[in-house]
Image (cartoon, rainbow, N blue to C red):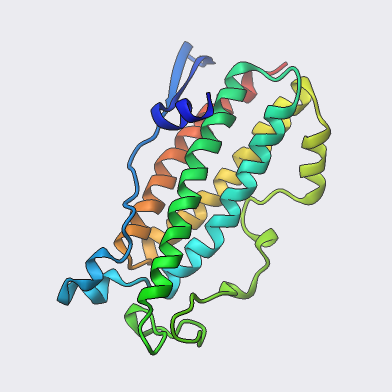
Length: 224
């Protein structure tokens, strides 16, 4: 089921909207490119293709952010009495964001191999004085738990212990906030990033997670 939903998307149907019954389609879209440094060997394109510090930091933050979305989704799937539409959405999030994590980790590996010898990203920004051939870390000096939208350990524990309607509601409420945090991160990457592949990935997040927020808001409204 998980692989099928990851490939073809999922329809979150039958939501009761203000104008009557409706349907919201949550499906894979605006696929992000998977070759982040391909253009770096094309002569003059190298300066715009190679990732900047903003690009590095977006990926460094978004990987653990996505990983927590997987934890939230797995928790609600393990609960009894959760609606099938909520379960379907959680399945889709696992498929979509697992794929994105894999792509972003591959980008990090490619960047490490292609890092200029002076460890300076495009645009002339020193990458936190990282040694040549390494990826900058410690972006912004903040722990991953401080990123926008991240659930606290207490909230994660509450969801893991919840069942039925309580689990359904808590998952949706936490995931809406989580997605809103991702939108803020993605907006910054689109606005300030320089790597075309990172910006395309961030645009995918903006489109997909806006759709999912709409679907989840409708699902919350249906709960007693």
